[in-house]
Image (tube, rainbow, N blue to C red; front, side, top):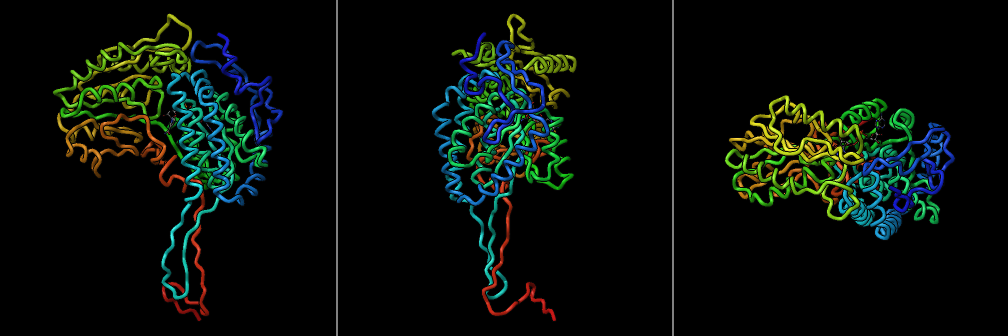
Length: 505
Ligand code: NAD
């Protein structure tokens, strides 16, 4: 199918893969060809950036930083407000581009653009609230306080599954904090990045702030590796798999840089027998099937109290039958394709392992081979005890359901995963809810009651523990990751008293 009408936000002739406000004539020599997962059609090609192009972009971002950091934060916020206006005006088109390139359904694509708008709004307010504390000095006539300064050029590495929102979480906050930035998007979704950069250029260029937000489309070996080893980038914010995070985290730590890691999840929902089953089914369905199971917060495991476990599993299996799978751009579709054939192969291999390990496939389990594109059936696997495969994050709609006898056992099971991103309990028992949220409860960065594991709001700090990487982005005080803290002590007396009462000479 011809999707040119949807790619026009990104493509304009021979599309270059690097911009610092101006698109460079990239010198890598090769292109990345972009295919839509909807039917495998090629929808565009982007000229890859080389290491030399990267050098140009870093220099521009460094030069922009010396200017941008001196702009008062509320004025920086004003440009983010205008960026938000542009996103509002282009919400439908940007949402459709996400659906086309990544495969999530229209409602979720537009929801992702709304998430960008929400974080822009948040950042505008934040631009007047970058507060520091004041402390009481132990010395007479001394004042002590802390203040926050911009850090420099931030490196942003993003995953394919949120091709706009994750950039926005980082970019909006980093920009009001006074940083400039270089974004390396996933090579699976470069068009979303290019469309965004074109909007950024329209907002920042006329104000003389080219180079505040830059984009570079390049390979991991050439551009990615150069970025993470580059001492000129004091912070690398990287979103993606645990495998990638382990490598990036080690490389950045090796040069004593700062890392903000947002990595994989293996998220579980605990359901007890007081739960409202109707809303539990809806929460699990959205969490497990939404975005075809390709969210970091997707529900991968359900741990249900034994008296209701099998009934719940059967209700879910029935609900799964009504999930309309197909073109994510069409009305009525609830689940689009996986990103590519590799993802389909991973799904099929996981289902096979689940069967080999004794799991009972209650529904799904197959790839849809009657059409082009990368479609699979949402799948539920029942087992009395935990299957080894359920320890892995398969980025596909596979849900493992197991029963439990005590809430302590359920919480221990929920925590028994390498990752610690999102978790939830469905219950109407106050004590169970509090137990789940208590110190001995969920060990995840996100813990919900009567809400599924996915669909976080931007106002809270987003991120997780253990192999999820420990980073926090978006709301609350996540902005502190993008600034450097400075403690200042001012002596306004006539003497020089030393701390701890030390007498010297
Ligand atoms: P991925 O790890 O394959 O790639 C993520 C990004 O890392 C891409 O831009 C990739 O090019 C880059 N990268 C890979 N190797 C690199 C290197 N050596 N140097 C620099 N950059 C490198 O992940 P993916 O398949 O795109 O996304 C899916 C994964 O992302 C899942 O595990 C999912 O849970 C996770 N994710 C986490 C969050 C979160 O906020 N916690 C959000 C979205 C996705």
